[in-house]
Image (cartoon, rainbow, N blue to C red):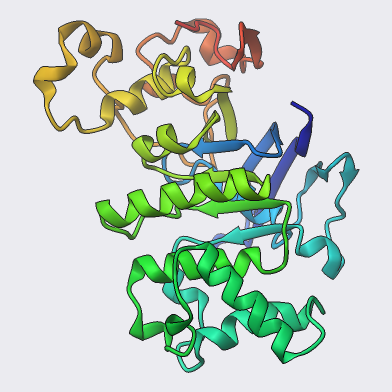
Length: 326
């Protein structure tokens, strides 16, 4: 498929101020994201998984234009988007954050919240047209007109999650970026939101990037998966391969760390293939390890892993950045 969203060599570094009391220590640079590249086609879902601090949310913020890349490019339909975007470009990639209650003014009705983007971007001629568009949006996400005149505190978390999606869709984006869209929801509501996202993808031909810690949600939603560690993508490919039979030791350990409701159903062969799960702590991004960033925690690390950073190499339909892919 032809890519709608293209990310090439994306890098974001932050300069930290000098620590108080350490006059001889100059400003320190943290590489939150380093040389990240991927593509997403219209109608496709890419999920980005990894531990906290791996750079996933920084990628989301740069995609949405809320942060500016230090290097690299973000392009839409072959056109590069500038770091400081015009209002017309800003609405093309919409970010949905993980806390829906923080996304609304608690003193204003939900109708007002959905009217505002239409007014700001001039997408409706008058109030009557805005009302019609807003009603269509709430019905598209499975709600009714009764929700519009309520305050955010008067609806459930699952309803707010759907209203956040409705507001993002109101400006007719081409790309949706969702940061932990189901993290604060219970199991039944998660299923509803996942089915809604899959339907919206098909109906609106959107490119969707989902950032999540929840491997089961990633498996249900994604066509392709990228696994990040210390700001870099270590494995990228079809979700059914990356999230079931990964080649890099890090996603293999991530899968082994996922709780299994019935361990007896996994079987000894599957358990042995996954290994023992993740050990140790994520290294500080202020002082990342030399060579492969994962080598201090990797049971398969050798001398070359300490000395040289692996480049992403294609292995069939998967790209893996590892000296010893399994």
